[in-house]
Image 1 (cartoon, rainbow, N blue to C red):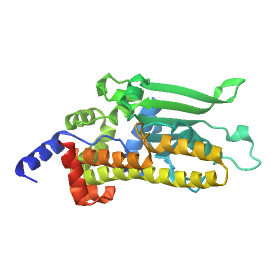
Image 2 (image 1 turned 90 degrees about the vertical axis):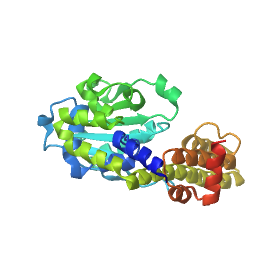
Image 3 (image 1 turned 120 degrees about the vertical axis):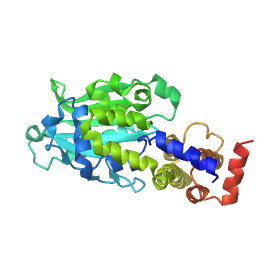
Length: 329
């Protein structure tokens, strides 16, 4: 790397911070070791004074049971309890097909409160599901509301008794407004979209509870190793979806071979929907190659080292260099 490259990188790290776009960095900032930040986020979601909830928020993050052999072990990104309410926060990078999944996780958390023979009315409580959504499809992001709130009720005869409150957040749109323009209950969502260091410092001056958060995020953003780990994590998550597609396809191929054509068709459609973005209609192999090529180009533009790129892509360094060179022609 030349001196000019180093200077450009330094300037970038001095002015920019990482946005909260995946579980790796979100969990590093919102956890049981940083309850002051968690309490601040809860106070914004509930739109109440932080003094009302200070010391009363319980960190839970229980492990949810696997329903299928292909399903990975699942922790909710953030699960806390306040005054009998379970608050589940899910960060969804590329929000598509996750609404139902997250809703099922919410039901599992609710059911964990019940035992056989329980008096349901005595146990009844409200769960709040917060979907923090980044959309890879910018057209969908533009057409989706900035914030949408929905309710599921215990009993249609009693609309005031809420089982689940669902808050869907379009982070792409929060990115385009300033922190000071947001009302109190939206400041947590806006915080996740901050990308400039001076914006973060400005927020710290008005939000004393975020002092440890802003300091930690600033440190992570200047760490070359963490930035590489961050990009490597994103790449691995994407490739994991491709591997899942292979397993689903193999499973459906086997089902088709014994006459379960309908099961194969539905399974393949599900795999394509969850594992791929649009444009992979020419076949799985071509889609995989295109995906790797696009990810390699994207990682290179973000100054990720060739060693990291070759490691997560599974290609040789010569193959990676060739893809990068061709992208510049």
